[in-house]
Length: 188
Image 1 (cartoon, rainbow, N blue to C red):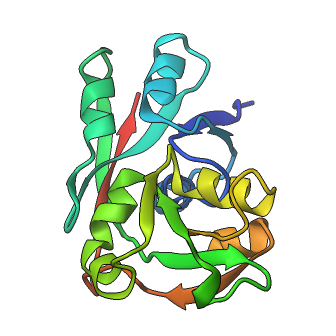
Image 2 (cartoon, rainbow, N blue to C red; image 1 turned 180 degrees about the horizontal axis):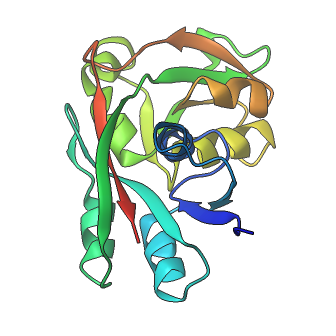
């Protein structure tokens, strides 16, 4: 009998890392797996080192936003092997709490990489709005949905986060490039 494979992802439920891990398992015919939501790359690599997970999935580079610096800094602290590199198309959405409209928004929050991938959109449509960096796109959406962020905040996050965290999609596909690929690493 085989054991369930434990896969750590650098994000919360609804994150692009979760999507990447599910894609990796589907493409490699892995059916018996469990995802661990470890939020950041350092936590994923630490969990591999301490043998709490079998694999880790996290982003390393985006076709528009460039290098994911958080991943590079974390990778410099650990010894691990790369099993696979692959890309997924990342589509960003502007999410708000139900009932919040464009005029209400005072701040836009997301992972630094998501903010980079949407920088021209943000400059064009939200020039006067404060931008706030967050540890994870899905964590920002979760915190907005739970009232931990100001009700007048919007978050840039995956579409799936709208239903998971009871948010509304104000605008879809806000990334600057129509094809916005992120390369993910499967670490062992």
